[in-house]
Image (cartoon, rainbow, N blue to C red; front, side):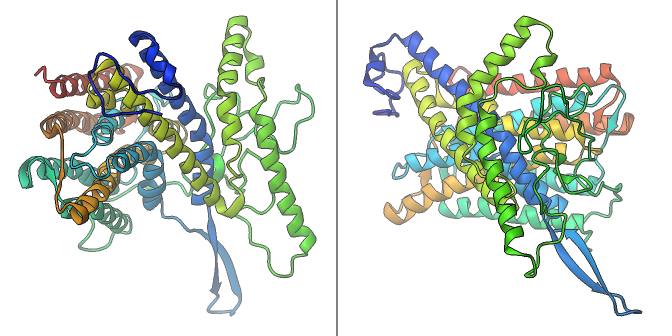
Length: 531
């Protein structure tokens, strides 16, 4: 493990990751190895993303039984309603879950700096850089994802405006406490207020969704679908022989999106997703009563454990129905090589319990634990890269870390833009993730450090290179205005934020990516002391 991760800019970095012999390698070769390890960690994040979303969708699909009494006949009417509100699910489970790599990294960075009067730079830098990646590249991808001519607009503009307000306010608030209120210093009260504002965001968004008087904007909304995405017809191919009843390997239709991981399909009308379809007792069916036989309950447990065991079998399967469609030998070899690269991660993540247990909560929590573990390794590798090369940690955070840890955000928004009828969840995930990045991702780590310093040293938390971070906030705010303006113009002219004619969609894509490059370039030059 790193012997002294705070070393920077020395000619010979004495820190190492696994073996002390690493210090004897050349600077260029060590840098290459650590960047290679960092890239492989990001591959692991992409691998755990699918299981994370399966568990999240199972949590959101949970229903509760409601018994109504017919006032005329006195008969009982049993119905099932969703436990989770769409808006709260977008802000909490979806946004918090997809931002968890960044939140974990920032929290780990804060715990490692516990007792230090200066805050670590990896956490805030990664979260601000992730916000820029969410707003620009992910918006750019979502705009071009719908088919040519297909338009997808926000159904509930009121909720989006509330989420957008709190997203912008989060970065204004961060600038205020860094430069105006207590320059270059964070107090325990500022950190506490930062965290509490996440609760205000939840309450305000819920009030807008329910159209509470005096707390909501009087804006009309289109009817959102009952489920996040429409059900798809899933077909199985029989040319590969008998199919295992518990196998994960399925094929999602024959359209152009067949290579997309189908993580939003667990809200089908029957309540049974395309993965592991033979399991009885999903959330859309009534729960077993006390009259159910023990043999029936034991059979259900057997199915769950059979699924868990099959996860390990599927983890080492290299060929799928998709790979056999590739006629080119080199493409087949590339697909097999990629799957071989994923085998260690897939075997490790097979230990995550099936999402059918406890409505998916156990799998949800286990996925977050694995994400935290990967985030810890990422922080170690980033320290080593900074130590060996002398690159400012903020520069690494703005670029490599922000892009890599934002992969779940990209996957979530891309698939929502592809599969969902409206643009609500795709865009809400972006704006809400940015809010979560500040209120939770920066607020909680700063609260941990400021509380420790307050009770132990009676000192606040000092921010190193606060001027560079504040400058990045100003650049982000300025460029984000241009991004939101383009979305508003598309709504006014095309009638929707996402999709539309391919030419205009790709022009929007290029513009958003240009805004991101401007942010990365200016922020990196500022924290490096060049401008």
